[in-house]
Image (tube, rainbow, N blue to C red; front, side, top):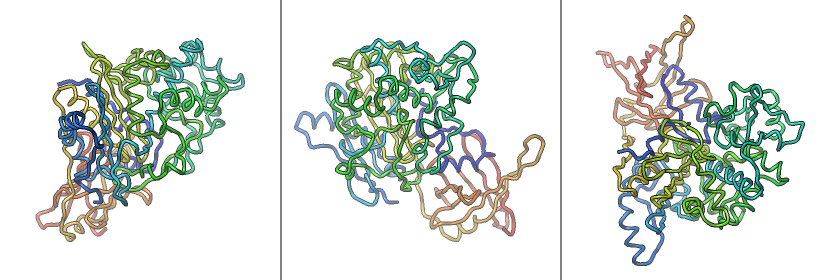
Length: 507
């Protein structure tokens, strides 16, 4: 989930999230219950649509100004490198691109640009399961241990075993990530998590509750589901997805490895501060987030699900059946998908993210509408991709929608910025013992750098001379001076709570 931090006493660990990717790439924010449809270096003006004939052009021009209003704040406030929006509505589809595929170039993303789609991979994994149900008679209630080699130990809670249905609905009781997940390279964190390490974790893990008892979003569970299907049917996971799903659906650019010839179409990934980050690689947890795709393919996948016809229609319809409560009271989980049932229609959706990309997909069968948003910028700390996708869906359905109100960096006199540098300390208590939490501020150009250890830093951007903001976890920082003009305190506001930090004199 997008991390909604409630206290600043753990600010050091929050800043560390820029490098610790244990729980990030599957972005399922609690705030997405809003989808219930209840009432620098970025070229700011860059956007494009495909050249289309007259009637289609009129259709696009009807919606483009509204979508521009929703998307452009991310570009204007330098919160996103590039964005591509795909829409299917009223029997027609179109794409609009914004920003850049690489901030060192001038190419605007289009429907053929390749993105990492992160956890959207999960709904391909559960579709593969549903296909096994419709074509091979596999039962969702089957314990997974029956599908794996007999020497693989699967945890269970008393007599209750983990089933395929448990994994597909995030009801397995398995944690979000395994406890032995310790990537050698935090910038490419899934590359070295192998089958052996997965089996070692499962053999040692004790479930905290019976499977089926509670919803807990699990990258581990999704990875295990895809791996189990591959083992049972004697194929690689990649073959299950590419040969059995993508080829029949005509998804020509959905793949796990981008070929050398397609590399020019593969967007560069960026973190929340628009710092370049590497593409991710996967091993056994590939079923949780390894796919790369284009807006053309993802929208085609959405429309196929929405129509529920064709060779995979029956399997797709199985994945859309609401099964159990999900993250919020008005949301349910299908097989992989999250579902928000309304009186006359439902919204089916999922999202995803890696360290340099974020994605959003939603559709309504009854409204015959689908929305895809792909960005080559991470959104795991702020949920901006989801917010944009939700607003576009609301707009298309004729409902009131919100636009992002984002702070923009303004120039500040360097002498003012220099006056904020130094050491700050917050005092708190834990187990009746005093804790001293420190932050060191330094200046880098027009920005301040907050450091709590050599490998943990957060950039704060000036909104005014006294108020700063972050581009990751939504946070405001302000400074207060004594009557003599000396900076005395720093206040940090996030998650609705504010903490006070005393500036140490002479440091």
